Amino acid sequence: METRKVGQGMMALACIAGLALLTMFFSGVEKRQYNPNQSPESRADATSSEVNLKRNRQGHYVASGLINFKEVEFLLDTGATDVVIPQRIARELGLRRGRANRALTANGAVTVYDTNIDQLSIGDITLYNVRASINPAMRTPSILLGMSALKRIEFIQKGDSLTLRHVY
Image (spheres, helix red, strand yellow):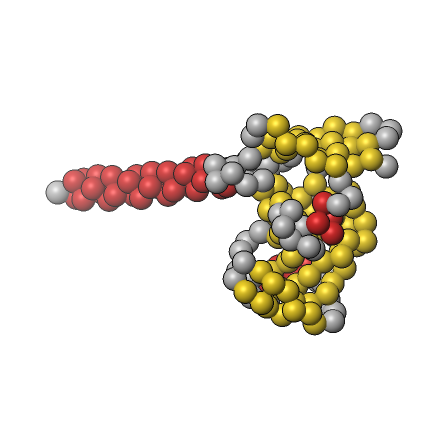
């Protein structure tokens, strides 16, 4: 009888461990589907840097990068005037809130705060002194990579890929 209980306990532990591993595996798959550019493909030479991005399943370009040497996730948004950072992420990055402004978003008018990013990187592309806005109402886990950064970069879309090119 004792051996049977031990066997049942081991079987239950094996099932729980299996479910935990499956959950971890599929959560990684889901993250890679949302952000297929977790390690963006880059190429640099003496005159320029290029980064090739793949579109995600929703048709967006999401890429991992750095702000002031800290890892972040960007959602490229040519409709955003600035790089827009959710307040929670801005706090984690140590960015200071500046002057308050009103901004029109897809969800209506909101108050945002000026800030400045010393260094922003995606792959081998690095931009310095980038104007940005902190949005306290924004709840997404991604930073909108808007035109205050994108206007400094050439970008070419072909099919499901986007090439970012920064000329020095």
